[in-house]
Length: 288
Image 1 (cartoon, rainbow, N blue to C red):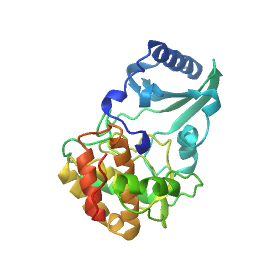
Image 2 (image 1 turned 60 degrees about the horizontal axis):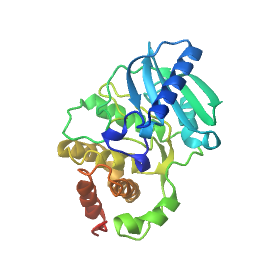
Image 3 (image 1 turned 45 degrees about the horizontal axis):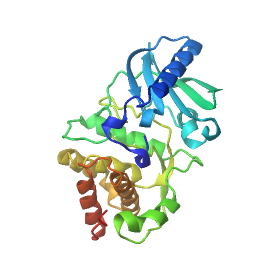
């Protein structure tokens, strides 16, 4: 779930239309049959029912669907490209198989990955609502993983200058700034995409080039309702966030979250994100 698509927990349910949820369940069952696995356990739905995942023995089977003419591209291929391009030292589920097919003008991709038994820090929402105690080793693992990921060459572009140019005045109340330093990152670093110790990074569909500080600024923003944890992030990663380049990345992350908040997402987080943005810019964010 990218920040531009971030939603409240209530959206992570089966589609309201029964035909749509039944269609996804049939597709998931068909993929399980092709992979010769047996799906079990609770259903995990993604954004607006676009994805459906379930445990399948020692694997996790997830399907994604789109209109046939809109399938493919960066998000569609993210998990597979991460599996081949990102070093194994970056902890993530290993991909065991991919299956593509089209039925009745709907395209599907099924991804069979190893099952991760460690639970995500949060479930159904990317934001922390209270502080969490994570061991020092977890923070060291995160620092190492992001450092290794930063060295991966890729032409995948996760955050673009044109978003800044179009939206900074509207959501941050300041002139657009230029992205001058980029790195390779996860692009969706929030608490539902990281496990408790030992660390595993989940959901790789949007990884790619992004501004320095974006990933960490996003994780910090999703921690603003948990001030001790937010302070820990700034302490561990001040060498990134407290630089000019890091500030740029953080502002972009905050701007994209404010855009999501303007659509009714994370209402409890909106004033905290606005306050953090104003702290960095000295300018009140525009009111809706």
